[in-house]
Amino acid sequence: MTEQEFLEIVSLHVETWHKPAVKNKVRSWDDEVFGGLKKRSGKLLKEINLDDCILEKWVEGGLDGGNCWNEGDHYPISGEKEPPFTELDNILEQVCPKITYLEYRKLLCGLTPELIEYDSHTVGEYYGNYTTYGYKKVVLRRLWERLKGLGLV
Image (cartoon, rainbow, N blue to C red; front, side):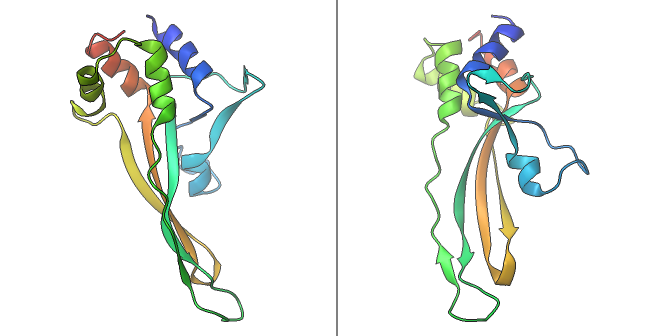
């Protein structure tokens, strides 16, 4: 499999991919990390490349209820369970459909640095309210190189 064939599979099986952050060229942290390029009616809005990444995000928690009248108390926002990395699994199902469980484990966590990067970010809102988001991402270049290194493509 060539790099171009890999990218074509990714573009067909990933709903949203994310451009890497470029300092001082984004409006907010949310644009930087979670702003993505999507497919519309099966057509790509922009070509995908190995520097892009796939990403899953979820709410880890926060605080809500604050208002400008100081009425009522703040209350916690319940966190969501970490979602499965469905888009990564969809890519692997197409790229290497006969991958074994042990190969899958080696791919995900058998080497340093880890394939999946985890982080979180808190977005401050008005009146003391805030939401903390967790996210996990895979840079396509790292995935491609790891697949080649393990002989899976």
